[in-house]
Image (cartoon, rainbow over all chains, first blue to last red):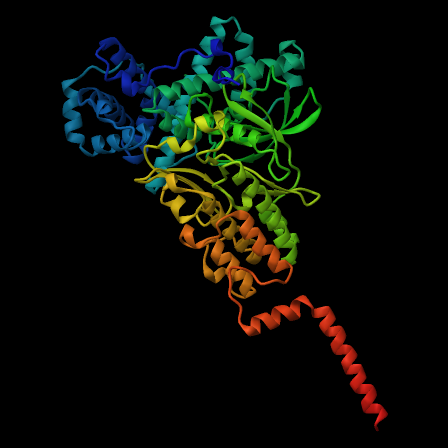
Length: 252
Length: 345
């Protein structure tokens, strides 16, 4: 058996996205900007929620600090300084947030100076609503370990949220909107699991079609989420560890 | 971007974990185990209509270290056709990109569970000899297991013993020239210590030392393996693990190797355990058959090579070996004495 036997359906897997860690070091300004956008898209919500809870800052101040933090990432070239051999990017960024907020005065000055914030729409109102909806109460998270878990959970939520959005666009591009609606109805929305039969009746399709559509959507979701994750990791080892962590494989 | 509830996150995780077997000959049945390298599912081979165990990586990609290890494990297993080693049927990659292999579905119990139903020391020793058979066979094919421990031994419903999980196996020089050798994990150096797995009572580790990669399970891993001295590992490293395994079987204590664990044991068995799990390779048995032979000699009531006997020991062993005849003769003599006694009254 040749090594090619272990490369199934190569056409189904687009080339691996370049890691943001490598991309921010690129000489190509556009590539650098894209990398920072990808990073901000995945991390702004966890950072905002973390500042709200860990540092107990009011919403407006946390918004300023979140924006200020990403300006700092850009200006001080924090990602260029990150060494994937020493830690995970997620942990590194959380430590950077702590350091940034604890040095708040400087942060405010930096914010006033302004800076080139990556072009990512930061919907703070939605983040605030989510924060109100989460079960975690600031008073109930005293230990740093809990906050670390909280940051990780929010990061996974953000990563999966982006992957779901990518999947939606992917389905629209392939005229498989119904598949996405099935996925949404079964995996994302219902509190109690609806049966495949119920979904089949609702969408006027057979149970086999529901099964196939959901299998396809989950496979694509998994692929997209892992692609996004790979982009946010410094090397293969970090990717493997983060994948285990994000998908809960190491905890079982 | 849509907000995902905790429940939705769980469902997405569940959905993403299930391997995509579409287009393959296998139908997924249930998850049976999770290891350091991946997940094992029960699946049905629809062509042959039989149940198989399907071991699959959690993360796709055929070029990663774990993928190489899984492919290599399948190839090593394919080289080792022995009743005590689980046979591999197929290897490849699923449509979702994850590398997998299928093997015989073993219905049985892990050794650490099974042993609870085997109170007799001789029965436990016979079980141990069957493990030795499989390991000796692998050594004859120049393959070291490097992760022998109770959790990696299965006992089938008819008492058959199967040595599982060859993911850390090392092909010794002069061994197979097949693809199994090409991707020896010893060539892989991780960047930093990595905790890869935990089971109920032991933790498999994978760390780097100045010498090389350390992979194995504390308590069952030889000192040279723990130092990462992979260049100098030989059969005696597995013999250390077998010594720890023997100690576990005799004391049902899965903890780290220590002399304390064998207190109360027969001195000969204690000596066998101590010699097999000696600190330096030179002090251990030179081969698995030598270790197995000592255990067999013990079972047959013969002196063992691991220990020099005193006169008292020899007498005790002689008594144990011929207890039936000795007691028979003693009863006969006692009867004669009693008859003589009553006749002369």
